[in-house]
Image 1: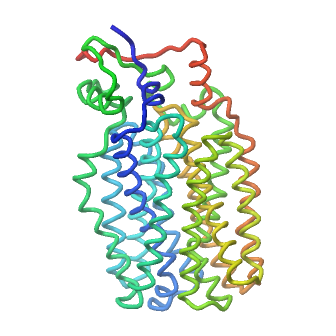
Image 2: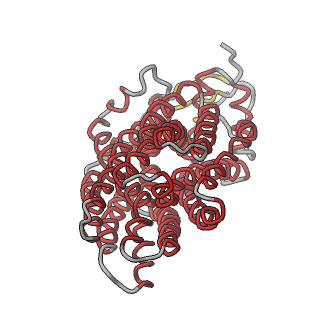
Image 3: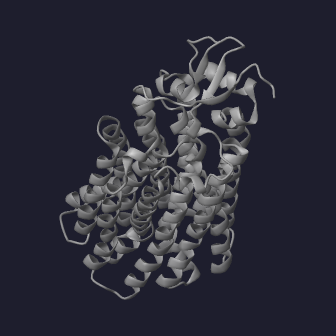
Length: 458
């Protein structure tokens, strides 16, 4: 009989078809999620015109989904540690698909806001769960790369929203881009049948057969007997109060720093996602050109996410992330100045790379920081608290737009949070992270794995 640490097994596994399947489904779900999130910013000028709403009211309509995302990230992120990730992810997909489509069927600003709030529950809840899923199963050497590649689906969704929005809105009206968002609900049965469950969750539930099937796909070259004992490190054992454990073992200060960093980054992301089209149109660009800026913003986000993940696997992820915040401060500030169109496209791309891309790398870092038992909870709370910034951003920028301030001042207001976010990241104590502690145990320090034999049934 041998004792097998399932996290070490995942860390050292070779990338295979199983990993590719997890990556495919998580990325596809994030593409849907990114589309649902970006579609409001794409359609905002048309919605304002059709429903006759002022900039400040439009900001509140956009923020209604973000209010939902706060509760979705916190409660559905925490729920996954209790009912499992597969069912939680399926619930989230149903919420954001059905209610984003429903928003396209209403004509009243209040009903629109209510539908977007309910969609926001799913949009916010799915993010921490797919990050936790990919982080758990990704081999350690390419973990940040796989998580950021997966999460670059968020930018792909934004690109699809920009491409479809340009043609669908002109041909069928703004409602059409919302109705298209209902299609992913048809894939829920396939998602439930394809995504694996979290291994520590199965171990805690005593579902040893399901655990053994997953492990055999994770590392097919290895063989185990019925008496072998699968286990997890002591700090990864499911806890009865996971929220409280975000502040245990010296993680409290760093948890607060993650919350501040997420708040600042999500402020920038949603300020640009919601108002870039309107700001560029107000600066004299046509609606078609302004939508092109959204496309470039999301293409830049894809490059920033994958590039940031690649750098994070080769250098210290904390300092890579801090550098991305610094780039955001510079690039967003430059957006307020007149320059040749070709150069402006480059700057918009850099802004996408260093805002949306930065948030994706921050998600990856958070997933590595917390132990598996509280990973979804930790990321869910960081995203939930961070959504406060996302909620404020459309409202604050909407007020600035209504004040008719110079373009430069609007973009400086979006850039200031980047400096604060960089400071918060630099203050995170990486020595308290789960990845650092696991490295210490792997180097020879004593570990206390807990688990059950796969032959046990009680």
